Image (cartoon, rainbow, N blue to C red):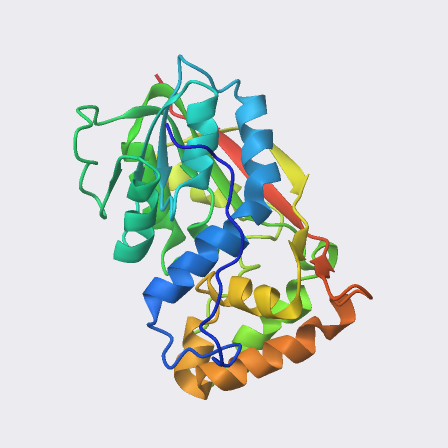
Length: 274
């Protein structure tokens, strides 16, 4: 099993401008930025959930929308059997490079006979989902009886310093629909997704997940890799969005050139009735 350790940030070709992305659909570069810069920011969330549910050799974990698979690696290091589903080809290939079994969309991962899991996690998919209820229903369908589903979302915007930076996506999307990353942060919003999927709430928690970057360029690239800025990039152009992001990040720039924003994420554990 590959190590859960993350690599350093990618190196741009000599002479390339900091944000040389011609299109919001430049997925290979953005997928790599996610895996090498942004994904590690949520490690405290993954760890808190796995500690709470005592994830170990007796646990079978499915990551729904697992992206490049760091959360699955951390579960595998605890002895769990892991698999994932990820619709984006480039992210899925990065997960497979980590020797993870990850399928596309609703198709089961190659080589994994199981069709249901004792724990299904939705760590990253909900904030940008067009239909969160459908995502939760799919998670419930893939969960064993008496198993668990875990949903995660941003905490209250007043507890997240990244809120003003994420607002760039809304401001620059024009008439396009930009998903509100804090749409599921209001009290009871995650819980409201459970009943239609026939799930029962079984506890929740909040986790501090600072977003820390070695420099401003890494911060911009990492944030762009989340997908939350896609509509803004399509409407306003990626270069302009990157420039606005740089401006929004300046209050969080430290004397050594690093960037740090304190954030809180919330998770909700749900039971699949027997």
